[in-house]
Amino acid sequence: MLTTPAALPLDKFDWALQGLVERVPHTRGAVLLSSDGLAKSWFGLDEAAADRLAALASGLSGLADGAARLLQPNVAGELSLNVVVIDLGVVALLVCAGVEGSRLLVTADREADHGEVGYEMAKLAGGLHEHITTPARTTAALPAQ
Image (tube, rainbow, N blue to C red; front, side):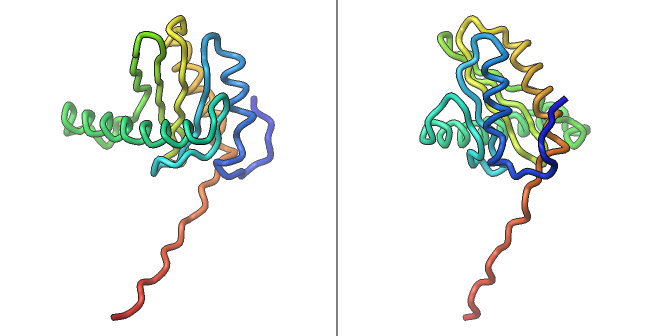
């Protein structure tokens, strides 16, 4: 069980991502991103790579959601993103749904067991549920014309 202070913003979970990468064999890095594709926390990557991978993960999630609506139009609202895997031979990218609309991306070596990585990602995302808050965004009013 995770022991952290309750109600942390998404940018305070580097420790959890580090734990995942260090615990799961052959993983390289991890990014926790907001629902709109912004890297909030990361481990094992520099900031620029985390930002690019967060944008990519957001796109992959959108494609997966679109595939769900296309393939199962009557139950699309009931489907959830489990894990999207892109196996590039030398490295793999895995993306799963997080909490509060967030996403979790992990990069792994070719030797990684995708099932194990996906399971650990889902476990981490579920374990963070009680600790994550996503502050409401405010939209500035447009000036009257």
